[in-house]
Picture 1 (spheres, one colour):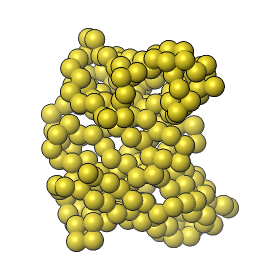
Picture 2 (cartoon, each protein chain N blue to C red):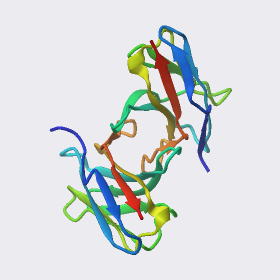
Picture 3 (cartoon, rainbow over the protein chains, first blue to last red):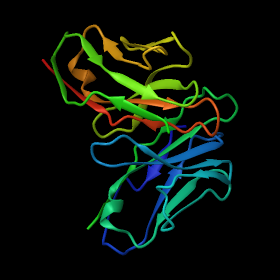
Length: 115
Length: 113
């Protein structure tokens, strides 16, 4: 297992288009997180899955954003009607369930540019 | 809500210099504290962590001590190398709820030979 994998690594899209990103967590990690990182800022939490259940969503996640984890393995994050303000790095992380002090492992991110 | 404040960068040092990156936090409970590092073109990697007051996290020559009385978790290294050039993020996680991380803005470290 090579860690958390995200695809694509880079995406350029025109304003108003829809985009979808994929995250493959470390196998057997039942917790999956999406974060967004804008230039000069730290990552900000977007949403959290435990297995296939989406248990928490940040207020940053407007109704143009939707995330799924249909079989409790990979996850997708879709942004509809993209805006220039959506330009950011989208990070996925996973961790094992159980103990609270387990480490979250991050993928390399998908960099979105909306033009 | 929870928040993390880091010193602004970039921090520019010569090789073998002493490093301190300040980090303070605000939290409602008793969080775990982390330092993550992001090398150019790579994802975030956990550098070290501390889960309770007075714990010291250490890794690769870096250290940070969880100071509850000053709500701080400053990162230190006695002798930096060029390969330490990266962006360093301080983060906290409440020990309740869904284990989400709250990050600082990051501090860029540039080490010259």
